[in-house]
Length: 100
Ligand SMILES: [Fe+2]
Image (cartoon, rainbow, N blue to C red; front, side, top):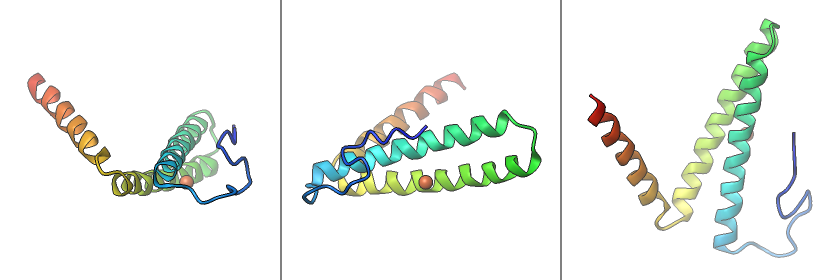
């Protein structure tokens, strides 16, 4: 359920965020999108109503697009974060290639 545990709790910040604070806020937003995906997919798998399942599936896909938006922003705002993500992707790719 919504926790609203972000630093603003429904109110805007009294001042503008600096770059690092903005990056953390975007990471928090990404986590919220991932949490929403989890919620909608769990709910979809727990019900039988076909109309609700269809809508939940659509909404979960929308949240995945939003997650992609935030990942892009994180990589755009951070000078080095994309390098770490790319390193992780390559590392995983190598691990899976070793299994082949
Ligand atoms: Fe969203």
